[in-house]
Image (tube, rainbow, N blue to C red):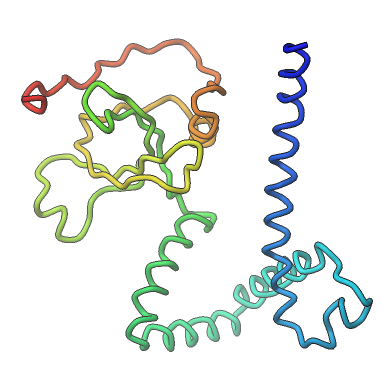
Length: 213
């Protein structure tokens, strides 16, 4: 009986979570209907709400915005719009930061997570998977002597939150693992191990005994 119950959980839990996530996402996207005049909304036209209609409207708005932004006149309008936003003191800093992150994450040429790394975190002797995001820049690079890399250490099972660290490259181990495989490994809390090829022996970074002193 216990075995059947656990088997049922293994079948239903992933299904319920998937349905819940999709339902929550569609519910959030349905809020775009609030942009329409009251007389144009499904409640006024059909007498009741239509779940998912707002999601279709959201996707349509995103698609049309993309079409407009990719043609010649759309690009000029977008540049004028961004120039106007960058003149507003508070909006300038928020918009610029968010745009840089979104361009890196969603553009075809973006590579926010370049490589999967093995690093010691949060202490020596404790290992976790991190992603290389680049190299330190700005005034930071003037204070870090040597070959440093910027890494993002995601939390489990939600990889959208985590910690940004700058580590010496010698303290990281590059994994023969794609970013997608590493993300699945993290989200599953190590349960879904990625397929691996022949074992390649790596020299682990030496532990710094002075850190424990």
